[in-house]
Amino acid sequence: MEFDERVAALATKVRNQRDAIQTEEAAKNAFVMPFISMILGYDVFDPLEVIPEFNADVGVKKGEKVDYAIVRAGEVQILIECKQPRDPLKIEHASQLYRYFSVTNARIGVLTNGQVYHFYTDLDAPNKMDAKPFLVLDLEDIDDALLPELRKLTKEVFDLESIISAAEELKYLGQIKRSMATQFKEPEDEWVRFFATRVYDGSLTQKRREQFRSLVAKAASQFVRDQVNERLKGALYASLPKQATEAPSEVLESEEVALGDVARDTEVETTLEELTGYQIIKAIACSEVKPQRIVGRDAKSYFAVILDDNNRKPIARLHFNGKARKYVGTFDADKTETRHLIGSIDDIYLHADAIRNAVKAFMGEGGRKTL
Image (tube, rainbow, N blue to C red; front, side):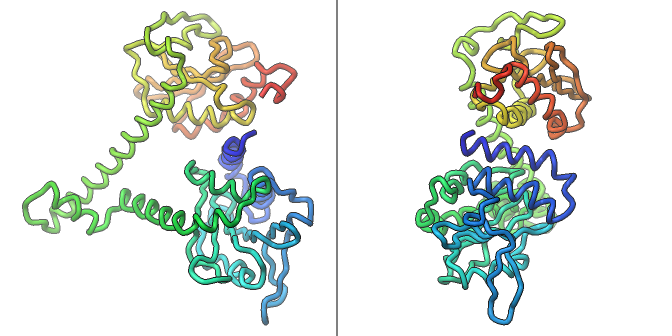
């Protein structure tokens, strides 16, 4: 799999298994070790590459250990400290990282709970780990813009100097984006005043300020949703064959598979929920095939997800047109659809095995060799 596909596959694993992970040791085995091997590309069973329970006594501190040390050319380059799953990560949790950073050659420190990874370096003072991370990777909400920088830390293309030189910009960009996200959810007075004074000429009383606080938060939410909707639609339409967007086709129904899965009707309106569901199914299926082989097609009664742009290879269907209830349809080896009631779009992950099995059924005995 390509690098971004491996990240997506691990993200799916985290979503599917996180509720079963209750301890730090379980998080290491299920999530952190796969991160080191699948994403960074190091052999977790080779002590010349990955040292578990790395010990480097510091002053009067004896016997303290960092969970993992990654070694290149005999020198420690990356230190990784793991914390309890689901616990928010704070610099206070990184005491061992902070101390060991100054007595090893490591320039990268990683603090993680298995889902979120904070990457630190020494921008503020040489050999002293910064208090704030320069890169934050959340496998629940992956920022694709960060993946090229993360890839620089992999065994394949390890480029420490490049990532250090970009770290300052990454650090401030990340902090600004997280600050904006906070303002979008719970806008502070300055943020509210900034927008209110541009649309309202009257006195900004306390009552009026609270009114605009709600309006600013709502406007920000709608703006982000509109932008995401446009980008997702653009990505989906770009993947459709040219003739599918130029002329409507007839939708034919059968007991097993609707042959109209590859058709689009000019009256069909693809919703943001459908596009989000499609992206989830695509992320699940890409553990078995390359993502470009997964195609989405909207019809009047459902949104179909198919393999290889072939209507005879159904992977799943999204029945989201009902006002009260939503269903995801999965297919068995005989292409018979079973509809499952879902309470939220995230419930699609509960049917990940059925989605993967549908893909495998079309791949034959060759399995992953047909990637």
